[in-house]
Length: 166
Image 1 (cartoon, rainbow, N blue to C red):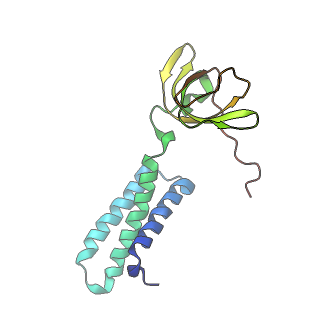
Image 2: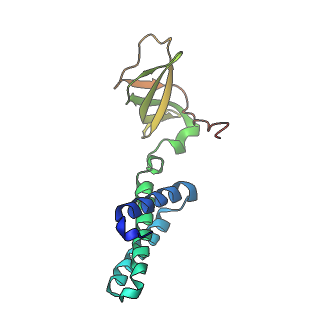
Image 3: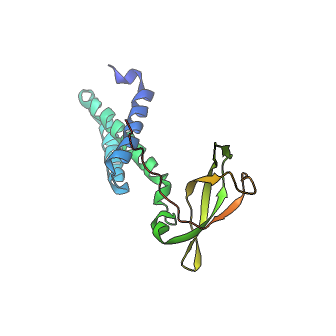
């Protein structure tokens, strides 16, 4: 296949490979930075080479986009934020959250996504961030609405992975 006929497809595949490497390979930010930087320097250096090895420049460009996919994914990972609530999760007594999605009515609960903006650890509130999925019992006196601020006296729990993913 002649990849030069489909440059956009080549870059999309390379970016996707970088995203998958981030999720499955658990590489650090520095690793993706080194991969991208080295590939960019190689790409720029190979632009002034004889025609016979121009394909190396294409390979270096593809590797650059792969590293760029990993860098973009790493920088947009919410859990790596400095003030994310997950490091404090075991010692949380309560948390304050703003309902940030439309409320879905389920048979016995309301399902809504909320953004945690503070957690109570011991006797003090700490400013944090992060999203959480809430299931609120339908027997509550007031139906939850978008934008409501809720204080929940419970520790946030991790969602269990599927017991039979296949």
